[in-house]
Image 1 (spheres, rainbow, N blue to C red):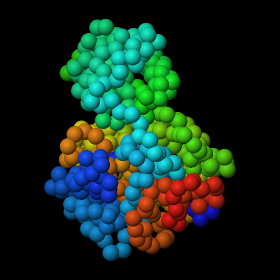
Image 2 (image 1 turned 90 degrees about the vertical axis):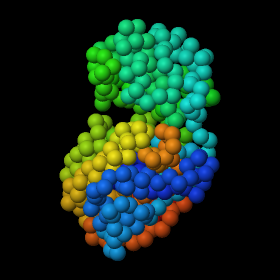
Image 3 (image 1 turned 180 degrees about the vertical axis):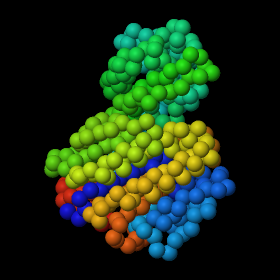
Image 4 (image 1 turned 180 degrees about the horizontal axis):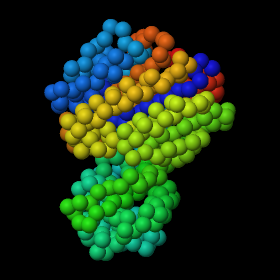
Length: 389
């Protein structure tokens, strides 16, 4: 064992340039980090700059330093698709060869909607591709009057169900989502990657607000991941943010939900103060959910700056036998057309306080992260990926 603790922080959607096959996904020219950085005239990320982020792509007001604190590289996605599940599963050693179905253009089939109404006892409104904040403004008041569930999708492979917490209590909404998950699992052609419960509050469309009680019901990974191998070997596998949901609890020994990126980093710093042996796996979803999909470049830039400040708080708590890995799961360029994720290479920054940074070059798969973790803890290695340790 080379390191006692490994912290993996996934900056959700922070891509660094169009992948070599981006044209297949209509994502030629995308570059999430570059484009968000140029949207803010005083953009400043001094901690990430010192770690070497400027060596990976052109970032506004950010130098390509000569002696970065972290080892640095890019990672290409081997799997098909550009969604959350695919990216995270590949990070932990699974290659996804069949994309999850999406219903962006058509909405969900009427037979699926009929089954959902029949088995839940609620009528359905919506059934379109929409922004989650906009659809509750449009349909929230009707939902309050009728108790009809607001069902919608997006450019991702998701079925989202929104309900007011005072109309349909959160446990009841979760029950509904569990029914939706079973229906889609029973029909492979409808098997979206995630069912998402989207509770909200407010008195009318002027003040409807989504709450932190979101819950994702993901498809279980189709095979064991490095998380399973670690857990089976009695290592700690601590999940912060939506990591537990993404892996449907597989291989997780301890988990903490979060309300925001800030909360996620606070939890990570808290964990860095504790003694454990294994990994702390963190997802920071605000980049994607609040800014990427909404094409809010300035908001995204501010969020990255906040992350940079949080990293400055985290680093002093890391020990000489700790390793920090910063990466992403896909892109979501705020200046690209549409509101979908973008097929991009992702950053790889690997920091240890006593080791000098070196060039890790371009990795052929995200799974190099999982392979390195398996290498470090001497557990079974995934079928794909090569250790960079």
